[in-house]
Amino acid sequence: MFMETACSSENHGCNIANPLLWLAKTRQHETRSLHGEIAGLAFLALFAREVGSSLNPQEVVLSAAKHLHKYFRYNFAVFSLPADCGGVTAFSPLDGAGCRNSFHMVSESFPELRYGRINGYRFLDLSAPLEAMDAGDYPIVLELTDNSGTVTLYCGEEAAGQVRQELLAALAESLTTALRNAREHERVKELSVRDTLTGLYNRRVLEEILSIEENKRIPAPFAILIIDLDDFKAINDTFGHPAGDRVLSVLGKILLENSRKENIVARYGGEEFAVLLTNTGLSVALQVAERLRIKLSEQDFAFSGRKVSLTASIGVAHNEGNTAVMESLLARADQALYQAKRNGKNRVCFHESTYVEKLPAKRSRPGKRPAVLQFGGATVA
Picture (cartoon, rainbow, N blue to C red):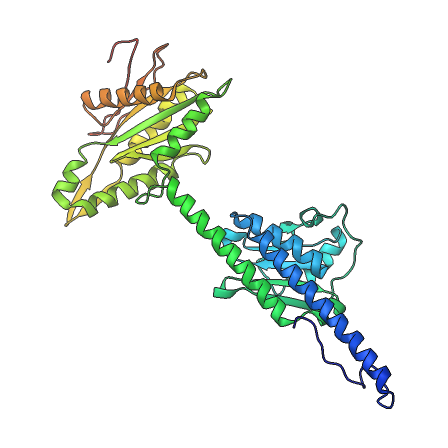
């Protein structure tokens, strides 16, 4: 039973000397309790269906906040969840002043909560915020299973006094299941687009993004860099595949740390990597490629007590801000990479069929001489 059903002559003011009156009041109370239980069951079914209809953790949380407010009419709700589910987030139907009053009341219990993260009434499907008011001092807590978090609803005394633990437990179980399914879906989706060794995007993601760029009516200028470690096979042959895996993992980290957030870094295959530079002209693309080449050449490894340094060759292709067929752009970058290998490795080479643009001269480091070559419509230097 979700609502209290106990009845006594004392707390209902019944006169035991009048059994008919006592019986009528008892049945009236039981009827109200039954209606309350049916309403709780109906809400539980609706809640489970709605929060389970999405496989996005943030959408699950928003749906839970909305439907919990419809039932409990809370003044303030705090979802204390794992980071991939939004972390510590609050919802309130109150206006700005009311939110601040409520926030100060609960901030000591949730030190990670910030006022700027309070989601407003719009997420609760309200046309306008409620008037400023202090939230009640009656928290209702949903303890999610698997120690995956809590949901604390600050309600008025009446709402807090009527709810039963059985309903709260059932709601917590439904929300836990919905969040578990959503997080698992996100994990599987992430695995489908990520390389398991390096954590970078895989080749399929890169090709899909290039395909999107290809279909734009007026594409922005961008460049593709294909990066290949020189003589990588010797690492596997000499020190074993675990050493090779470590090199690839470190290489992926270097590329990611030295690229802008809006750029796409992917493992292209084997010891090859790709970097898609968005909204980038050719001169900047060549400078980025040269900077990455130097960064990679400065990385040292130690295997079996031996110090090992590696270099990389980089092929660059640029779309000139015009529509470019994905296959041809990748092919041009591959050709530029092949030319860099043929011309001594440890260098940047670019393929540009329309015009030649030189990288500004830089002072080279001894033993690691940078070189930028151009071919395809011009002579290879």
